[in-house]
Length: 478
Image (cartoon, rainbow, N blue to C red; front, top):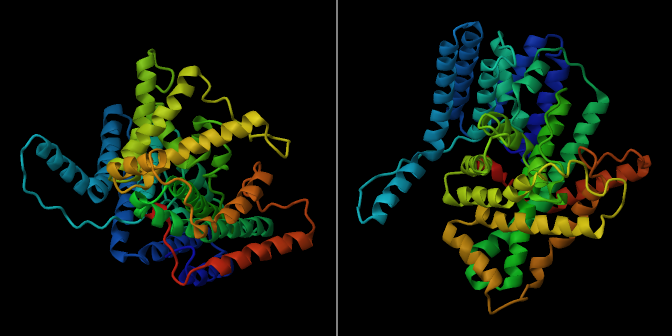
């Protein structure tokens, strides 16, 4: 079920009314209700895959309880190992089985050895990468004795399957979200109002920005061999805003829906295209995944506190290569991760990777010339890396880049390719003005008439650009 579909437009208000007016008297019923409607939401795509999320929840619920009751360190490690094996095993089979088989065969073919093989027609369960990492963080935190395990299966199962963030994040930590299932929740008009605004902004970014940019980006990438430099540059820019509007739009909708039900999820995006270097960009983009790899992979490897320069560089490359591989079973994602590692390593070596922690040009309407140049350079490098993320293959990506820098045809930008530029500029202007807020529709200093007018304008734009068929979110494939 898509957030931008008619089915969800019916599903959400029905669930909202039942949640606050029928099952609101009993916390256990509320949690059970959320779990069941989350299963309906997830099963809308393919009910057969409900067995996977229920199985993962069941395994980690019991393993975490056993782990907490076990005093012997070796036995605790065994229990954690079972959790890792089950969760990563399921993820590896459904997402990477064919990739590994085909890569293995290609490696032998490179040396002149031909192998016969058959790939499996494996359907990738929606959101498996997200809920797998969410349940893994729970068992790891219990193993580290950072949290106590849940003794009640209902809130835990509801935590794993919570429908606003189930299929594309944020990847929530049990330490943040699970306690919210254990306390009574009462309706807050201010929280619900803020959540509704965030949903509106998320839908605007998805439907008006991402979906319109996708039309041009898809055409340009599919026909890149025949297009000139200007069009190729524009195509890369369009994809940059497509993936931003699509993924951050989903996150905004998820956070907004959670607020309607009395929950607060972690912020997943903080205006990343206003970053002044690549390190700042990765503190502002897909924050839940970046911090997951930081806490469960980078720091256990030693982080930046290791005793040699080589190990520092190694650790950076490991987390970015693994992050790329997390995104999909294609060498393009791994190359994209490695390229981002190359771009960020200089700041780690110089010790400037945490130089920019606050908002750019804070307290000012316009950035300085230096800040503007930094933002433009960071965006350019990020957009270059996105080419590998979007391309069908490594060869396609390098061919695309070659077309940008070595092309007989230069500025042959057709007029219809420029149609989405004003929309992007409108979005950037609104986000720049409110870049210190969680989302830009917090017009606290505006009059009620101006606020209402702005909401109507955004709603009109959403209805104007909405297609008859709801377009799927990019990150559903991950």
